Length: 469
Image (cartoon, rainbow, N blue to C red; front, side):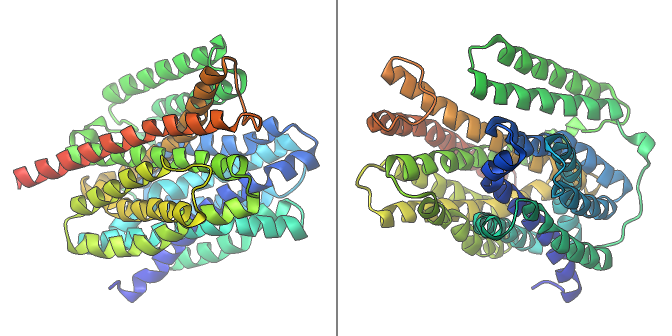
């Protein structure tokens, strides 16, 4: 098992992972309350979530690079402090502009911790313990997902929305104290002059334009020229970023890291896996609340089956991955994902609740089995000087996957409903529930196909690894 002196450091990393997960789910629950108390439309309130995601995605690679140059622990410590201060500021009700500023500040801290957590874990633990250590972090993610809606609902029932941010302050202070004492000390391996600041600005602009384009597509329709202009500009900015990285003497992202087949495939698999998970996490509440007519509270309890199952199976997967072939464990996880996607196809008007919960538990089990060994493979496939970048790329892939999953799910669903109805449908129609059910089943073929492609990539990676050994 782990050395005793390393456990507090792992707990410190886990606490901030818990907070970032908790923060996302709590804020989603509180959006209607925030919109009402700030007297703003809900469409504006959603920027409280969106700006957080944009800043994290735009800066996460930069802070991964800074971690490799200045020390992953150093960046992580500053990130803990900034996130905690940002949480304090976010709870101060000075209107929407100040809240968006505070959330941006909080997101900077989150990106600093998120980009270096895997790198620190990989430094702390040897390869034969790495998957178990990462499974502990996955457990904190599951706890945040489970606790978020419940804690958010409790806070909003007894206090105002400010406390959904302020709850992070005491937890952050404790995690900072533990981390400052027990996280490993590192010497800088470089200087700020080695950072490709132009590349960092290009990547931030790419993410900003991408998120604006995707959000605009959902709000004003994908036929609008503004949507495609934003996405085109995002693509052009990303192309200029790639050109810059190829020609920079000290690139932000050394593209040669993708020459390692295991690294590239593992990152792609992670993105595909979490796209599918985000996809079903969006569609299932529509089914439970709108189609089946269950309350939001009941739907929330049922949906908790996924993170609860992840919490149980993540440590089991970590232990098995450190003892046996990690690639086989990831293949088992993706096999479970395919089975769960087939299970979603049988959802209907009379599907018993025990069967729904079983399929959701299977979904969480698959995620718990897959995540730790795949992350360990990502970190084990690069040299030590690239651990920060590797961890940040892996985290960026998950963030972008979350966006793709959400947008693909709703876009494909409503496009299929519109085609059936013969006119544009942008919400659930209680007068024609069959429109939703047919569209949901047909849209799930996309996530099933993506799961099968991920399985084939995993099997190919396993075969090539065995062939070369």
